[in-house]
Image 1 (tube, rainbow over the protein chains, first blue to last red):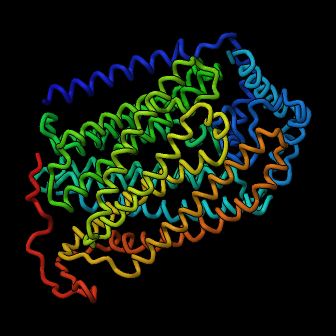
Image 2: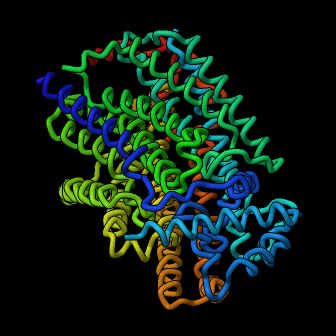
Image 3: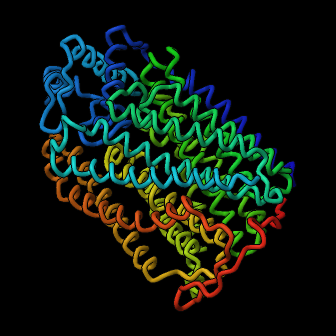
Amino acid sequence: MWKKKTTIFFTLFISYAAYSAWVYTNGTEQNIQIRFSDQEMLGKQLWQEKNCSSCHQVYGLGGYLGPDLTNITSDPKRGKAYAAAFIKFGGATMPNFHLTDKETEAIIAYLANVDASVKNNTP
Amino acid sequence: MNGKRTAFNFWIIALSCLILGLLFGIAGSLQYVVPGFLKEQFSFAKMRPLHVFLITQWISCAAVGSMYYFIPSLNKGKLFSPLLAKLHLLIQAFLIIVAVSFFFTGKFTGREYMEFPVWIIGLMILGWVFAGINLLATVKPKYDTAPVYIWSWSAGILFFIITLTEASLWQFDHFNTNIIRDITVQWKALGSMVGAWNMLIYGSAIYIMCKISGNDNLARSKPAFFFYFLGMANLMFNWGHHTYIVPASPIIKNTAYIISMTELLILFNMIWKWGKSLKKEDKELHLSYRLLKMTDNWILLNLALAIAISVPALNAFTHGTHITVAHAMGATIGINTTILLAAGFFIFFTDKQARFVHIKPKHKKTLWVFNISLLVFWLSLVGSGIVKAIGTAENKVFYEIILALQPWFRAFSVSGFILTGAIIVLAYPLLKYFVRPAKNRIEIFDANTHRPLVIKEKTEVIKTTDEVL
């Protein structure tokens, strides 16, 4: 009986380890490689430092006080300029983070990369 | 040395985090109802992580505090290393103070749900390693005969170590520079971490059920192990339902979908048990029992919602809406918090050696207020999610959707306020007791007046006859 339990446990655990290794590599390899540039990496870093995900989502990860920004840069109703205005000056609910132009552009560049990853990888 | 004081200190930290976390939750909900409320002074970017982090620490500290209290009873009243447990406590207290300070000052260097610096995750892992050593060395489990709660606690600790490590992988460029991989692995780590919590909490729930019923066979039965392994499979592979919208490999989505559907088996089992329990007269008066019965109902509701949102066609509409929050709140409040409060009251009464534990009328009323306010809270979140999903499908602008959501936001804010009051009423006597536990007396209560009938000196401080292994 004990062998049955430990065998089930280790079978599950080995499957999990193999599945994790696959997720870390081929399972998440992009159809078209869009690695982050330095500017996009700065945008990503700022996204984390200002904790933008507390209010905004990217790929469903984040809060709900503000809109989902996964496709913001290609949204025909909003787009890059609209997003940049909010990021730079805030809004009724969003605080002004006093970002420089360079920082605002970096966040827009990061969001544009996210947006492109949806279009280039959706089957 | 049984490490009881350390277990109580974990509970003090847990209950303090619970109360503070709830207060930040109320303040955060006001920012939904009153746009711009404290936005410059104390924005939602600070409020949300404080609320989420403190509530997650409530769950972790209460779960680990319960475990430290329970495991010596499996080893003649002795904990392998009370010093290691104390070190774990110090690490935990330190990292909470540091993380909260970072949040207050608006210094975020981490990620969603872990917005603190990565070295704090390192401390968390160290704490879990200490807990793992203490668990294994105290109970020296022979897994052939070990009850399922030992398996659950062991798996919980193991997967906390794994998933916390996984949540730090973004430090490497291989993950950080590929948005698809980055998001997928982050969801994977967080999804499985919830499973690790559940393992710890369910372990304590089964332990309490065995002790209340006086029947340890429940934890050794085939169904108990069947559901344990099913839970393990869900912990390992179910996280993918968060990533349906991420364009990773379709295999991830299909695996998650198939595994999610196995939860139906658990649901049927719960319904069957629930129906069976309705037929018998409810003679059980233990407050922990009442709380666990409440958990059963919330499991049913939440599982039905979880299964519904696991269906890809529905998930496409519901993901990114408050339905996901309803699922999270139903799980953390309706399931995890009720189980942990049950564990807290079980420890409270066991430690007082209260021989007859009658549920007091004020507790009955509080439980009603808790359930009704949580139901309104949960339904208002589901309602918000449906309104948002419809608004998004109709391609409405965000501002229009937010305006339509206002009545739902008001409902969840008011019900959240009442719910917080009910939880504080339940948590306060526990906090008071864990700060100043009864020392050398036994209280035997009268069933009708709820007053102590007999108070006498204890002959032993802790029961040591609980030879389970």
